Amino acid sequence: MARRRFNSSKHFRSQARVVYIKKFQEGKAIYTNPAGCLEDGWQWERKPGFWPEMPVILNGNGVPWDLGNAYLLCHLNTALRSKMESIKDRAKSLCFYLKFIEDEDLDLLEFPAQTRRRPTYLFRYKLQELIDLGMAPSTASKHVGHVIAFYRGVVVN
Image (cartoon, rainbow, N blue to C red):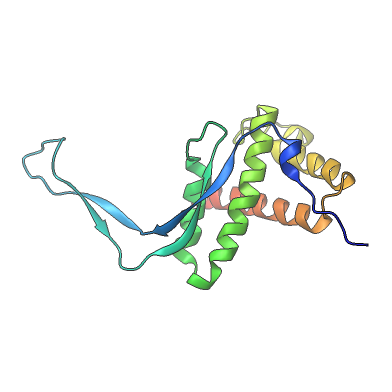
């Protein structure tokens, strides 16, 4: 008997989602106006090449999630093009976590002294509920691993 595909979207109210930029090109803004005028003088210096289908995480209000997307960009700088699928997987897991954070109205950077009240532990409990409802344990494990890596990346960087 084939296993039915688990649909997580019906378990969250949050409208957070991942969108993809077809041709993402890295670069940096450079201020070149010596007169000091704030309106003019900014130029975008592009790096050569581009990344296809770069994921961007949008929060429930449709605004790019600054911390999550900065984390993805850090991985982009260390990844080879063949690892873009890994970055997409991270984006999906972080979006899943963001949906949970928004639904539960949690602060993802607040870690109470009681371990069981921390957002990461509450997320793990939620994933256990979802496993009971049909989510593959390997999917839940992948989400937990990506969230842990996200927090480690935030602390280190």
